[in-house]
Image (cartoon, rainbow, N blue to C red; front, side, top):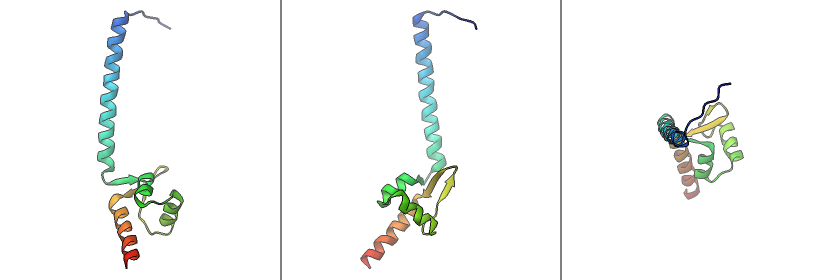
Length: 95
């Protein structure tokens, strides 16, 4: 193993550069994630929007009452589908 010594100020400058690059990468990946997901929300966001538990969301999926997509182990819904389902619930209650 090769060991190198550098001045503390040079190390601090290098560390600052690495940290700023990490921030740039994080920002770019967040923008990419948002662009890729677009109008899709995850299960947790859907539960919050509808005021339901994750178990109830699973029952809705199993019953075919709400469309979803599974990517690896995560479940996603189109925001429009969640809003449509919410409007259906509201129209049943008022009708």
